[in-house]
Length: 215
Length: 215
DNA sequence: TCTTAATGTAATCGGTGATTACATTCGCGG
DNA sequence: CCGCGAATGTAATCACCGATTACATTAAGA
Image 1 (cartoon, each protein chain N blue to C red):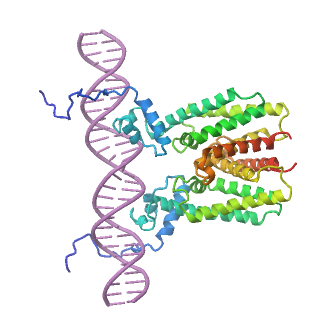
Image 2: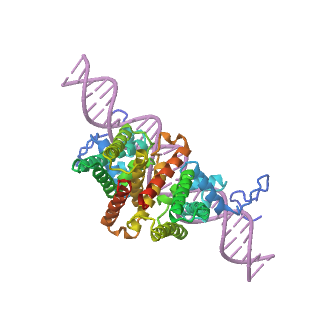
Image 3: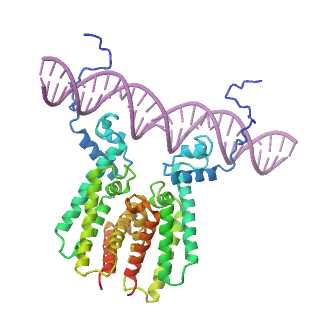
């Protein structure tokens, strides 16, 4: 046996079934980070590695840095977000304003039931804004959807005269603001009942639509 | 000279004017942290200490932990925020809806010109929510102000029939959402001109008020 | 099979929040 | 005026984190 004094390289095959190669680390790390976020904890690469039962340096074989991991997490979350909204829209009425309402409702429901994911998606604090191609594309399509609904509504004469772009941004701000108020703890008291907040979200959306719709 | 081998305790009085006791550390640390935030950097206790030309442990004589420092920073920022809104309200018209508009405008202008401060105030990510008595009190008073305006407007028959609480929350969500969209980088393209965003903010507020006002 | 690239490990670095023991100074009571 | 205790700053240290590097192990294809 030639010079071989480093460590204990005997590939131990005892009880521990996990092979040297994890086989699925990237995916498992993303899920672990997603889980971490869900639990409200700070997402650290080390903790994700710990949960994957892997060394602290291993994740950097799959992600150049922490930001890249967070971007991957955001992509996954955004995928689910978009899927839920499109599903809600699929079984929504045909009227543009009804669809607009269903859109806002689905948006807020998801944001309030997946606060940590929504936070990662929307904040841009966890990874550089525009760092992910897929993320910005998905987001742009979602925005385009709402613009289309408003354009349809205007074409059918359902809206009071107003700048469409302005309506679109106000609607986004309203819904985004409500979601973030929930995230940031601005609903302290009556938030004991999550359903109460969702009811309020519905009311706020209806108020907005009543404000832009032709009387 | 008795046993005295520790360090070099000779109180050096050479060129360096700063006395052992800083005299004003707490205040200087808050300002340094505020400055740090303004520069967009992560606010770390060590960096604040560095800027105050003081050892890394010194800040902990004035703040039990990082959170407490951030809370103090938030209190200072909130004080300025509230002062600006009250100033704007002082020279606003008497009509409730005009005052409501002035309120929203002052809110958004400050938030967009002091993004880092607004972030620290509103997010609750830098210190425990409700950890500061003053902060929650100030905030409650600000909210009470807006509620009063809406109540006045309703009493004067200026509003379309709607739940006041609902209007109030929608208004807060709208304005908070717009401010956060700006913070979180949701205004990428046409944001080259800051005045452009402020113009849009004005338009969004007007749209909202037109939506709740009696036609 | 055997060579090479992919993947995981171990050790290490600099930065950070936090704690502790110690040094220095201020301010108040004698 | 003195001196003692409280307040305040320093130095050293710890654990954790992101990141890098050298190395070990394995999978996969020529």
